[in-house]
Amino acid sequence: MKKNILSVLAILFISLISFAQYAFAVGSAGFENATFSAKALGQSNAVVAQADEPAAISYNPAGIANLPGFQFQPNLSLISSFTYYKSSIQPDTTSSGTIVPIPTGYMTLNPGDFLDDRIAFGIGSDSPFGLSNKYDGGSGIVHYTGWVNYLKMYTIKPTVSFKLFDWLSIGGGPIWYRVMDYGGIQAYPNRLVVVTSPDGQVRLNLAGNHWGWQVGALAKPHKMHQFGFYFRSPVVIQTRGLAKVENSGFTTGGRFETGVDEKLPLPLNFTFAYAFKPNDKATVETDFGYTKWSIFKRANVNHNPTNVTALDNTILTAIGPADKDYSNGFSAHLGGNYKFTDRFTLMGGSLFYWKVVPKDHFIPAVPDSHRLAFSIGTSYKISKYLVADLSYFTLFVLHRKIDNTIGNAVSSSVDGKYRGYLQELTVSLTYKWDDLFKRFGRNAGIGEEKAAISEKPAVT
Image 1 (cartoon, rainbow, N blue to C red):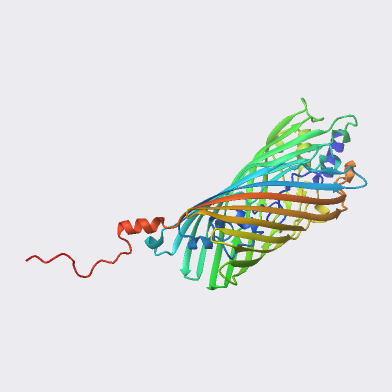
Image 2 (image 1 turned 120 degrees about the vertical axis):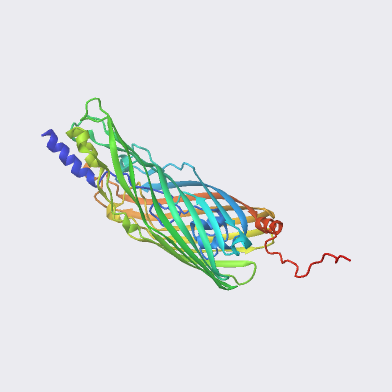
């Protein structure tokens, strides 16, 4: 009888329990985090047709062919996000607004005359996907669906760019994804078997890595018009780690841990962009992006059932699979900049993301909805070799009303109204040695013409 009840518990939790992601959604909803530089975010990421900084490695690597000499760009973003829930059936709640630091860094190298000023190299590191989400564990809407969720990762992007013509360049390279810690914490109800038993807890910690690739193109057919294109490949990262079960009502000692694995799908993306430069001081750009989030069908946490008892296996089976069935995402960006002086530039922009999480599979860990954002930024040329950028980005997760069956079986309905808010402050420094190879080339005699007639006096 006890085993039958446990089987029912497992079935109930197939759709209820998941370690789904909530992320900053600075990218394309879902859990993408397109945080690269202050210059990009200051224009609401409407920069694919400009691509005139080292961070272009991450949004249009073709652009680095136009960056002279050696350039190094470290960036730091501070992100804080909130989710607000309101309902007549559950107490109102708000997610924590912990400030999350996200560092990125890029370096480019253009040998100039050594390679006919046609080829440039670069390498970058950032975190294009990520999550940091925490609720009050006692809140009914998140208690069984995950009150802590995290995805800590970084990439390494070696890049090469070719200038095919003076007006056209292409670039790209591999992307190495490293997931350091992926998982979360959630509860499961012992009380469904023993009414007086307190809830148990499951914690997942997984890691993994995989290769992907990216490519971009940048065309400047006219001094007033520029076009950009970017493509990033899809990737499925096989993560492995531990599931730690605590306060189990079915296990001797109340706790155990075992190895588990889960596939983490990351979607492909492509973006088309157009920039208009009416004069030497102003630029206006619009970008349209598509992200194939439909790659995220299910979240399956797998384990070896022979390594645990039958009752423990029931608990682990309840963690997954969980249907996701995300839809494909679209984004529209509008941004620009105006150069007031040779040193000072002002930037601004706005963007809109369409939601990707379906209503039937919505849980508070992923409070997805349409998103509207605004940004402002400044750029100041401190010296010939140093430029500082600063941006402020604010995003509104628009109201969404949810009515589904998740959590109904354990009186933990997630139905209600959700909205969210995110703000991000980013600072960038770009160190430039534009003439580094020109100086080296002159010292080596590269590019200098030899005298046709010797100037040495004739011997008499």
